[in-house]
Amino acid sequence: MEIYKKQSLSETFSVYFEKRMARILLLGIISGFPWVLIGSSLSLWLKEDGLSRSTIGWAGLIFGVYAINYLWAPIIDRVRIPWLTNKIGHRRGWIVVMQLTIFFSLVCWSLLDPQTNLTLVILIGLIIAVASATQDITVDALRIEQIGKDEGKLMQAGAAIAVVGWWTGYKLGGVIALTAAEYFQKIGFENYWQITFLILSIIIIACNIALMFVHEPQSTERNESQKIADRMIEKKIGSSGLITKIAAWISGTIGGPIISFFKQNGFKIALAILAFVFLFKIGEAFLGRMSIIFYKEIGFSKSDIALYSKGLGWITTVVFTLLGGLFAIRSGVIKAMFVSGILMASTNLLFAILAWSGKSEWLFAIAVIFDDMAAAFATVAFVAFISMLVDRTYTATQYALLASIGTAGRTTLAASSGALVDWLNGDWGIFFIITAIMVIPSLVCLWLIRDKLKLK
Image (cartoon, rainbow, N blue to C red):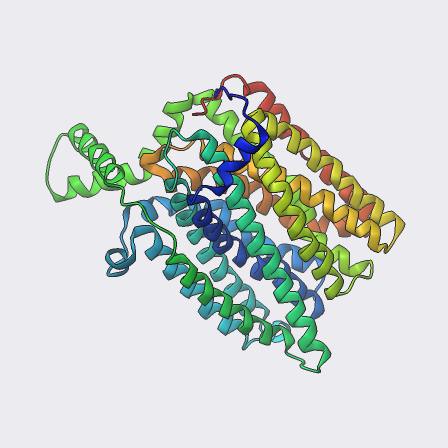
């Protein structure tokens, strides 16, 4: 486990001004924005078109692709995009292709009505989710590769800046989406969401332009390490030829990252890490999946949600993400995980109070501030934690594996969030109490392995 030297607060804070942090901020924005599309925008679009809470909750299963993107992460690590790779780099080439996929999907959404084309709307949402999940593989790899493998403090600072970027893309994108939708609704457009999606597609173009300012390190070491692994597999097969080379490439691409992870940590510790990663943010996901439906049901308008949940939430998230990064640097990432887990559970209870008290703008603001504070602490600690576990030979694949396992708990189980509210007969207070309890199993897992983790 890393030993942290105490620095003055100003010395610790200075890491945020390292020039690579600006690139990481841009990558975070690019990664966070698509969640606006398939999260709050799609949910509210379906809600305002008359679909039930359960239907909206189950529609959220499209987020499940984030839980399985590690399956194609090895391809992202190894396969080069023709022409684009030579022009702009391996990682950036993949990101551009995924951004274009999202752009054309938004154009398609602008032509559809959920009431008559629900299946097609969800299918296009799935395409956006796949493109976004694939993009995340590359964005996270490019972010990690901006920083040297022995720069532990910079890695934690980079995690904080990446989270700030992600929430900037998500929160400000949400402000734009909700504000635009309400504006077009008020001036009399029936297809106000469809027009909004066309406006959001312009942001995709801006993201592609911003991407060109992110330097991509040319890693010959990664390529050489992968080739060495392929040659070792060829020798074990005991023959040569094209078929052997193909088999070695496939085995190294798929099996190499997994073998490396278990070898580095040991089998039992690796399993415990995976269990913790799977369980940590389930409660937050249940709350997040239904939050915008909850706000709408207790009487808040789209502009209220944009102001408090997106605008005010963004400011809070940025501030406490940076503070969370400083806390992780000074206290260690393990302690930061415990603190953030407790904060997440505690702040969920504020939503229970809001549910039982009824519509209250000041209570809404307090709940959003504390929830975003907890989410910021938790996310930066979580990103730093899994970033410090990856082997640079398989950056994209191992990070995607860990991140997608975390997403698996949040997406597959949280898809039942709407059904749970319905089962509770709309008792939002009890629902939020249940989400608070959900963090406990993950903290038990982390406590059991806290002294055995190998963090560099």
